[in-house]
Amino acid sequence: MTIHAEHPFADSSREAARQLRGRLGGRVTLLTAGEGRERAGWTVSSLAVVGGDPWRVVAFLDPDCDFVERVEQSGRAVLQLLDGGHQYLADAFAGTAPAPGGVFTLADWEQTAYGPRLAGAQNWATLELESATDLGWSRQLVLAVVEAGAGEDPAPLHHVRGRYRVLD
Image (cartoon, rainbow, N blue to C red; front, side, top):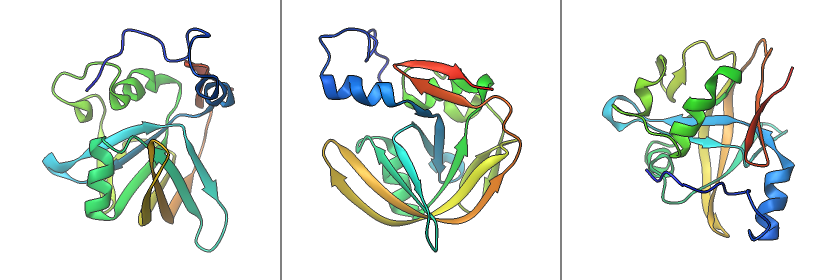
């Protein structure tokens, strides 16, 4: 885990394209995979949900994160959208906040055949890996949606310019 002392969007000395990406904003999403001691997860806002048959999720991840290795081994993952009360969970899974005992001790989880799902998550999808390729400094995962749930969404958590925003 790397905990950064500086804010990645804090000043104008940062790369302009990085600042542009931060200004796009995005729904804070958690991807998880594995089971037992082999669980891994990663906080993601660089992704797209693409219509089709089947629907697909295209995610861009740090190629060195444990989640990428786990999903490439298992071929399965769970996507869950985070809510306003999940800021610390998002930071811990992103590696920017400490998680004594491990990130999976910070919340309750339901184990599925696709990986752990955040207990009570109303907006989620189970996914099967179709492809994994390098793109720039990221690992691009294309995942087919197997099943999805879309429930209440009263306090969606978004990330814009390096800060969380809860929208209503």
